[in-house]
Amino acid sequence: MSCHDRACNRRSTALTSVHPAHAARGAYADASDIANHGGDGAFFSKENNRTFFWKGAVAVMLTHFLNDSGQLRSFAEELGKAAIAKV
Image 1: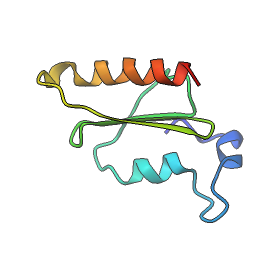
Image 2 (image 1 turned 90 degrees about the vertical axis):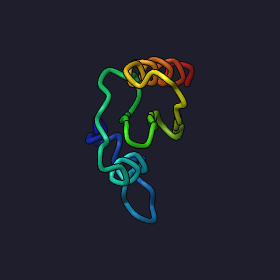
Image 3 (image 1 turned 60 degrees about the horizontal axis):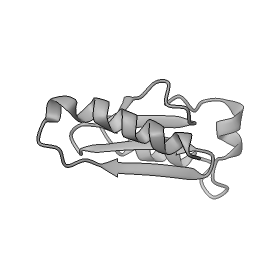
Image 4 (image 1 turned 45 degrees about the horizontal axis):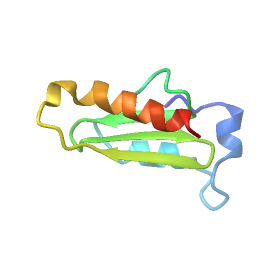
């Protein structure tokens, strides 16, 4: 995850001391990072058809229903980047 800096640690939950992005990423065995997303963290799970993006206290989870799985990741990345850009 691209969220290993002090800013990420400051946003950790008080109860678990784990940033929600790290906890969510750990739940997906096939998770792969997304670079240059404009937020604090992002990953893609092809097996679950999901993409996650974080910026500050905002989390975006996208679940995809596309017929062309070859375009799934690029579509998901662009949609998530657009959402994070609005935060």
